[in-house]
Amino acid sequence: MLVEYAALLRRAVILSDLAVVAGSFFVAYGLRDWISQAGVQPIGSLGSQIWLLALVLVIWLACLNGFGVYRSFRYQHYTDLLRRLSRAHLTGALILLSLAFVARRWEISRLLVHVFLVISF
Image (cartoon, rainbow, N blue to C red; front, top):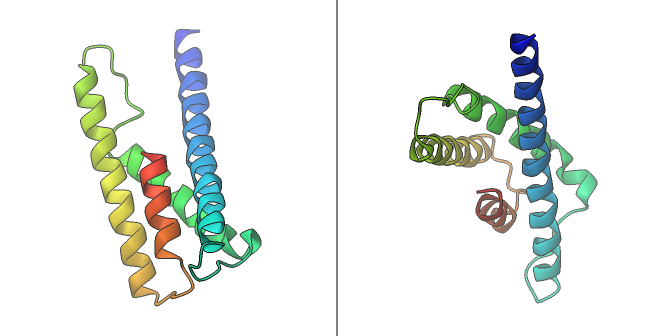
C-alpha cells in the first residue's frame, strides 16, 4: 500500500511540475506580448508557439528526472534539492537555447525564452 501511495504521489508531483512549467510559459508569453506593445518586434500567436511549449515540457521533465529531483529525499537536506533543481534548470536552459541555435529557428523570441527562464525558476 505504501509503495502504491509513493508512486501515486510521484506522478502527482511530476504533473504539478509540468503544470507550473506550462503556466510559466504562458505568463512569459503574456509578458512578452505586453512588452511587444512598447515597441519590441511583435511575437507570433500563441498557437505558433505551442511547439516550443511541448519542447520545453519534454526538456524540463528529462532534466528534472535526470538530476534526481523525483527521488526520495527522506534522509537528504533541502539544500541538496535546491542544488539539483538549479542544475536541472540550468541544463534545461542550455539545451533549449542550444537546440534553438542548432535548428536555426529564428522565429523563437529570445526575450520570451529569457522571461520564461526567470519565471520558471
